[in-house]
Image 1 (cartoon, rainbow, N blue to C red):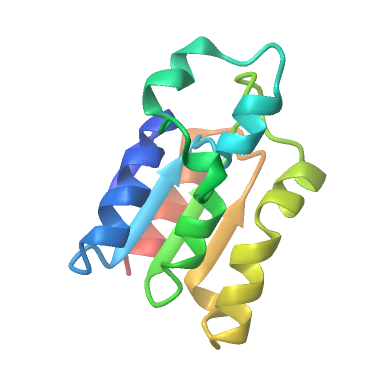
Image 2 (image 1 turned 90 degrees about the vertical axis):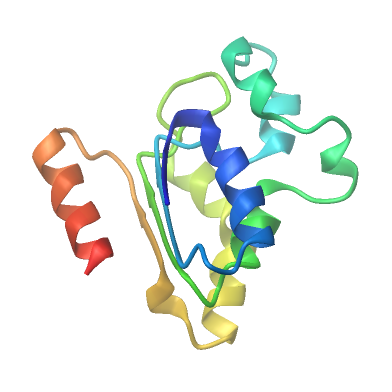
Length: 131
């Protein structure tokens, strides 16, 4: 399954509940409800894709970690203000899923690529992910 933009939140929930979704691709996703809540100038278009009260129980990175048996690709992740997520912040948000994928011997199942500037690059990564 492939999502574009903040609908990745819905895709992550669906993938956790449906084991038949064995490939999860996210283009320009948001990666953290906590980041959304902590960002003063957040993009209001992201709010419909959030789950009220979720950050008290889990965040999107926890859902990603739960998908370690499947192929997950994240391309050009977005910050909660709608700009490109900076690498350091992305690394911090995805530290837990990366650790889980690694500990489970599934590091190759999680791919994260930022700063892809053109459609050709994006297409190449998606085609490789589908193989």
